[in-house]
Length: 274
Image 1 (cartoon, rainbow, N blue to C red):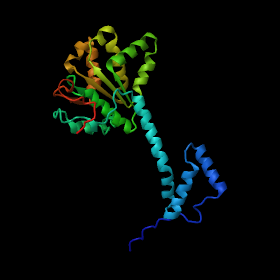
Image 2: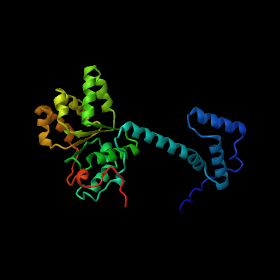
Image 3: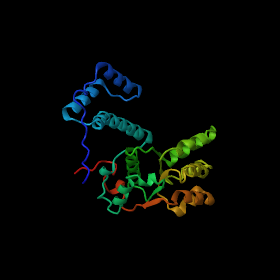
Image 4: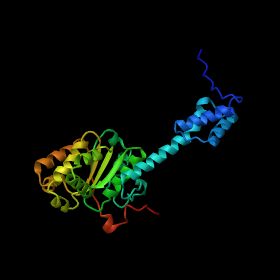
């Protein structure tokens, strides 16, 4: 004979109304544990359990679910603010029809965040105007929604920050700062050669960040220069090879092609309207 399934044990109606002293003690315990359950929420959960015959676990889940959801939402909001995006727009608002060659399925898969969990890098390469920055920030936003720590910065801003840190001897602190994020997005790499010309140590400073993160956490690099042009851009062939090895090894490389949104079509940063 098959064993009979265990029945849920509903909370006894005679015990769902806590005595005043016990009720106050429970509320005080929630305060001590920093769980923001109000007296009204406790009473509502008790009444619901009594009227609907909920089990002890169902009562507890109902009582804590809203608090857990609110706390998660606040954390996500902090992560998005910390990420420092220029434009935090979801992939659902991107105009995929303008450039059908952009690999939509691949990019939507990247937004699931598996490459971050595997500590793999991501490289977006292609000419300007294809929406690379928009897409990479949307992937970063999706990572924040998955409660991953993300930071967005352009290559020029990163170099400026590291140059200042080198001058005031805080470079090690800044490298540790950039090494802590689950996903660091470096946009506009190679966008302007003035970055390299203004700082003789540029290649070395970029390498410090890449090396500190290599195989530990994920780095996303957005560039409009081919890999075989890195040595010329960095001005140091051996360092360029070492940096390429750490960025590209095991990475997902997405090469984008198509028409420029800026010159021919709608701004991909704006929501699509029908």
